[in-house]
Length: 215
Length: 215
DNA sequence: CTCCTTGTGAATATATATTAACAATCATTT
DNA sequence: AAATGATTGTTAATATATATTCACAAGGAG
Image (cartoon, rainbow over all chains, first blue to last red; front, side, top):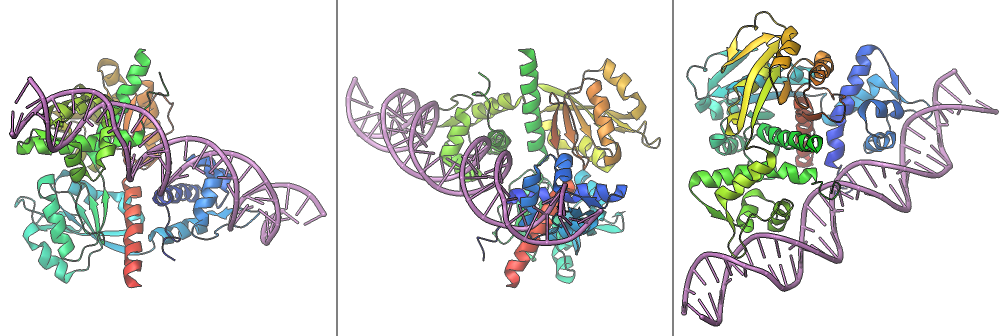
């Protein structure tokens, strides 16, 4: 009941997409859908969608389809979006502030509880009810407050060190925006958003297209 | 000479990582390395690294290894980082501004030429030499200026429409931060950064770990 | 009763990673 | 100048992960 239960990461990556498309259907007032319809919207095959969902149980009605709101709720439960998450952001520069202001958060129940920075000019400022605190107070803060997810938006030079400190204080989930691969014990899950790698890939494919067109 | 030459996307995604690690070696003053050493740093197998590089030619010296600076330059060429790119950012909200301020850009020769927004309060402001202009002037602007890459940081509700407008004006590379899958003709390359999907995946794995620990 | 779509399994295809092997060849040492 | 040791470039074989395709019984809606 361990290896058998393990769901392919590719499936997990698709769930948020299903969730998003179901949200769009919901918003337009459509409350019934089918794997075929979802296929047209998402570009994934109907069969794949059914198989993906089947990893977690049967959420549809045979011969009928899926109830949009219900399926959306079920996917939310699978992802854990039915719970509340308390977040801190370490590094309150451009990216850190942008994340704190990011409204996409609030679709689910994520709450940015605090930001941390070294820069005295930033300390004391507040962003959407969250105060920017002195980075030296992280440990003290984490002793008192329960935090689920830490977002690392520091310069890469200190990211590893910051991550280790956070883990020492009990953090087990890191959303890493620093352009560095954090070396972490395996009980810590790190989700990377490497913007420069993303941009470099884009650049490669942009040039490939230009070559193709030029020939 | 088409299907044979096509390089797997997985390889392309690894190149920026090699580039980054070589940069770090360079910075520390190390000018010679090997696939074995790179393997230890990156976590990819030495054999895989050699195979990846071999897709593009031989950059090392048999019996010796790789010259760090040279290999880095070669990877830069492959990705196209030896050229200059002119960028516009559409949507000058939190994310748009953060991207404009993002210094990771300037490792390579990317230049943010302008931002665009609808909000009169933002229009006229400037961020690092780039002025925020009226979104109504995008077409006019693109007629006069050559732009390589457009970054979409608008709300999702208008992202598709904005993208179509950009493509009409000749844009062929889009870096999309809006939580929406853009439907584009195939001569346009879209690189998505879907922050909420990233966060939702993180949430899933965070909960999986908690379950494992709880049992 | 009919039609439709799910849930499910199986078989196959494709993409990617892993492993092994080794000749070629360069730097270094002797 | 020759021997040594190291590491690339390269091919091949295999393993794994993921996607695709087909099929169809089961069961609910109408």
